Length: 328
Image (cartoon, rainbow, N blue to C red):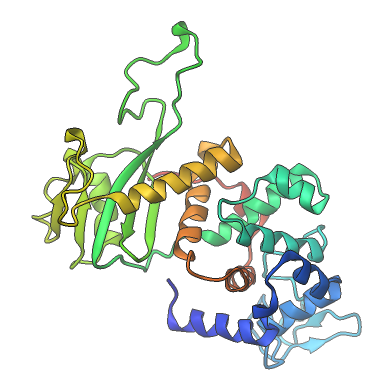
């Protein structure tokens, strides 16, 4: 999921701070017990060779002031180690930030804002803000193409009409209707990575645009009988269909969509079991979180925490958190 430079940066940080020793929240709390230690870890990760780079103009070899801040010899702006990171302008203790990132990275089904607020003794609103700020780090890598055997499927979220009065129910919302439901399109490479995106509809041109972007030319695609998937063979893909309408779930020859169905099951347990309600405006971020957890399923807790720490060194503003996802 990362290019060579990303891997080297994460490996350097992992070894430098010895993330391998962090196997529980207690160990995180004991090691990063003061804001000073947290800032030292951030500075050590950003500027391992001691070459402080100005986040405003990019000049190297900035000077350290007596108060611990830095000043650029070119643009003459002063800055702290937090400028240009997820922690910039935060009023939340860095100690709690580090604990929050570990909790978020270690829970397989995620953690709700209510639970995080209780764990860290902060308000639910603050916990919600931390969670959404961290979710912006989970954005999927558009450069990663799925290879080999790839399963495709759609999920329709929301639109429950069960408890509505008859006069308020929307007609004809069964099955794949998107009148009251939001469609999500997913792609899972068997024993590999996955991608999933909130889409405006499940028409052929919509789904095929994602397939062309995220499935390698030599991928062998497996789908159900949805008509939108017809013509994949003409696009150069090997394509097999499992007919769910005929109660087929596997034909014994490897034609199945069980892997993507398993991912959807995990995603629904995360949404309904942990978060209970997900706003459509932020749905893509929850999808990104589920994809991140799936793609890092074989990494240890300490490795995932290190990865999140490395990602946190990129800037995320309040505007980024409040920005809704516009479905193309």
